Image (cartoon, rainbow, N blue to C red):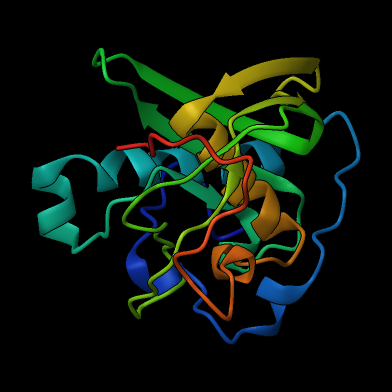
Length: 193
């Protein structure tokens, strides 16, 4: 049985840091339907994100705020991630996805002006990370049911960041090495804020 259960509080020490080999491996696909252990691990990951965005809980447990976390970031070689995103209207969106795959994307791209952050990286990284403005993701939910999710803007960036993790890719792998602030021509002029 996994140590990551619904009753277990994930803390920053549980998050695998840059340099660990598992973060550069392609995560293994899960068999469906997911096991109870898989479900509990995903729910624990989601709870970490919720806790990390709650100022009181985050301060008490010294949690760095996050909007997404992949299974390999807590040492599990499983193709799944959780995301907890609050949009500009104050609405909360929570996702626990198994075997996610981008099946369609726009040609236009966007970026976050202050670069992206990562729970597994403790150092500052500067540069623009071009991401698709719109994506469609096929994945399976906690019940093993297939779903298709259409995303745009910040939500699309979060999903691309987490799916990259599952493929052994860090966000900084997308930054232009010669000129970190150079963007492809198909990036929208107005960056995400």
